[in-house]
Length: 141
Image (cartoon, rainbow, N blue to C red; front, side):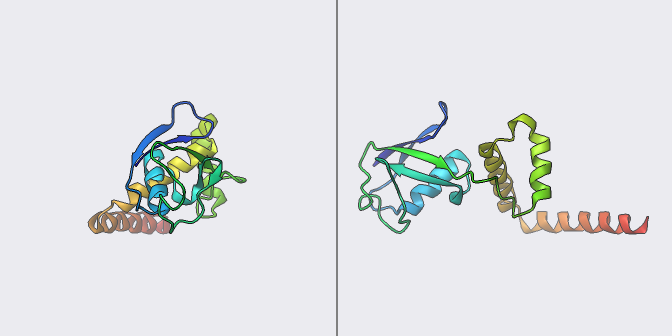
């Protein structure tokens, strides 16, 4: 089955997704999140005016048909939750300036998460050693 997913409010953000009818809604949402660089819990997928709620339902059982046009709606709320750390969120907003939209904040968060997910254990160990040296140098001053 082939679907077109479009990000609500965007003229450029549209992708075509190919999945089998037996695939679960959860996997469709993961694919959409990957394509739009969004965390899975940060958006809703709308098909024919109805949100896809049951993540454990197969696409065919959820009423999706080949050629369906899906709308992706961002759950913006009051802001983007950077692990409930308002200091981090404010610093990111300062860096992004006028580009600190909820969508860009979500995409940045997902980009950082993707980067961290692909770090090897050696990379993490090197980073930890650098941070430990930096922390020790700060305490000696």
